[in-house]
Length: 80
Image (cartoon, rainbow, N blue to C red; front, side, top):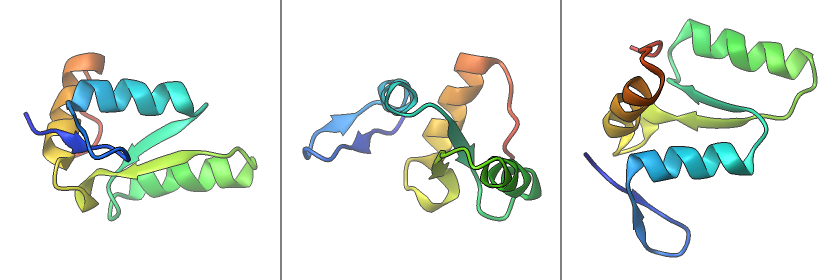
């Protein structure tokens, strides 16, 4: 699986990236920019004025690895 380049210039495996982002933000949405369900989730949190961290996996070179890792972690593939 791919790795993510961190702010500090080090590579981070997808599972560590996901866990780190989740630990740093109260609400994280792993989304695809053209997914209507992702947009509905983002709109709902905006309407509720809940700050969220959005990770648009289709804009990332390691997006497929992140999606595969999320499937392994959650046993659900909600982003296609």
